[in-house]
Image (tube, rainbow, N blue to C red; front, top):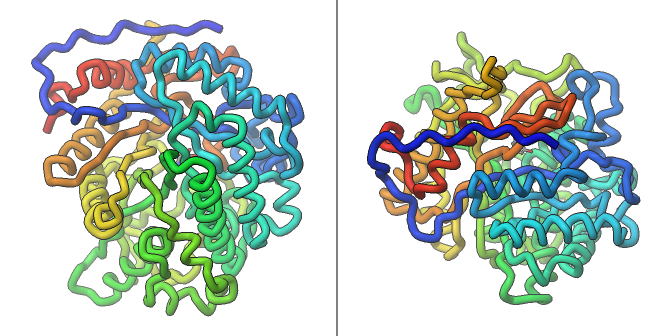
Length: 486
Ligand code: IFM
């Protein structure tokens, strides 16, 4: 494999705004999005393999069969991470590789992750393991998927299998990545695998994902009390367009409830909020919550990962400047929110990424402050930003480099926002850029590029983009460059 790099620019001004001692600067990726080798060494279909075959589900009918071929190139990819200076790498294990069809453990599948972890450790990079990043074995979906309570127990067993293999070398364990996406976007909205469009199934999936999280936390804790256990949520800042208009306030309350609090409250407070239950209880949530579930779900954790991409600006009135509407394909989907029919998403007139998402770095400071005050602070749980990043239509310049000025600005402005949060008294312990590599962006296929490293999908050549070089300098200096400091 060829790795093309361009030398990092020398700092031109004194570096200011340092990251606190011990703050982790890393990058993230996920199994199905980068590994490829979809049918190698015993791996069987996940719901994303199956969904990718549905006509019109994924742009260009792309799939993860080859992706970034990371399964075969992981050593070179770890070398790239080392070159960038990453303190930590956040990756996920594939359930369908570790326990194909949700059945017995597959030694070859486990061996891949074992070798990856060894390579990271030898490179001085902390492995940060996520057990579930959306790729349920298809065989389990055929038994009801996350809408079936039994899947939560299967998840616990899978978590223990991964721990059997890696528990001696991995200390930081995340149960789920973005359960909002693997429930509401997948079982209610239908935009993600398994592509169901069923409000009750989405609510059941959300509750069962939380239950699976709690069961896995309890089982892993019992195995080893010293593990660092947590979960990653994608959270948003939902603002009313007109804070004086009751309909807009209600729209913001609904989105906050059905995006943020539906996970935060059960995890940190051991209950679903009354207003949420009033909105969605009768739609299917009441039917799946069993006595004792919330105690399991609220089992103490050590870390919360927040994934932040953009905020929401909402109203009960349609927008002259709507932000909704960017769908990857013309396959019909529905709103992922179970009870937000009258909510309209407005533009704030901010610059947008290649996903159409408005760039709102200060929202990250606000979000982290709120989560710390209301949830993680009182619980003594450490807060991390486990994903943040942007897709843009990158071009390779004649000099072979990718001068991704917008992504560099996005990265630095969000890091600056984290330092603002820290200055305000919100303890934040790390940041992971999404993503280390361009990769399979789910229903968008390979059409959207989030990486700080470009992947040429024809040749699998990797090129560190200018954003990657900027990040390399930040990690080296453990500080933001003066120009981006404020
Ligand atoms: O690519 C995804 C990732 O899998 C989960 N968080 C959001 C990213 C960008 O859409």
